[in-house]
Length: 89
Image (cartoon, rainbow, N blue to C red):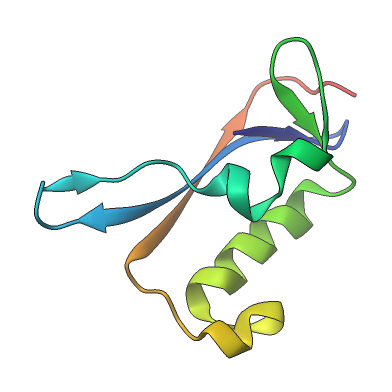
């Protein structure tokens, strides 16, 4: 999923390794960020208040920290963040 806060734009994916098939499973970022409640542009870019906060939340979920302490660490998940050129508000 692509996120922007008007200053920064990133593509973030959250995937679990599937050892049986030897590949990563589907992207879970849409679920973490409850994409249906976010404003989205015609080209599929989700508008958020703070991109850095969204990245921190994903990393906290994997580490089982912050808001995700009760869930515990989820080491099977990987967060990938790609910085994209440009910004869109």
